[in-house]
Length: 85
Ligand SMILES: [Zn+2]
Image (cartoon, rainbow, N blue to C red):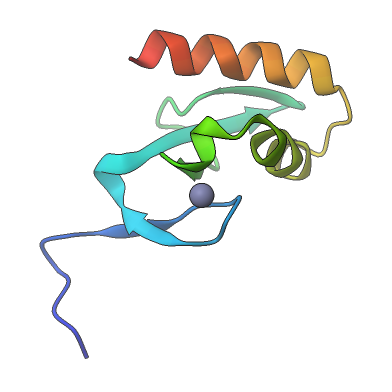
C-alpha cells in the first residue's frame, strides 16, 4: 500500500501508536531490569509523548519487564532518559 521504505516506523508499547524510529526511545529488559537497548535480545519502544507521562511509562514498563518493582523501574528509566538527552 503506502510507500514507507524510507521512514521505518515502530510501535510504542505504551500508546500503541506507530511512529518513526527517530522519535522513539529504544529499551530492553533483562531479568526484570530496564536498560537502553544494546543490540542484544528483545527490545521495545516508547514514543516521545509517552516519555513525558510517567504513569503510562511505568505501566508499560512493568508489563514489558514483567516486574512489579515500580520504584526501581522508574528510577532506572529516568536515568536512561536523562542520559539520552
Ligand atoms: Zn506512546
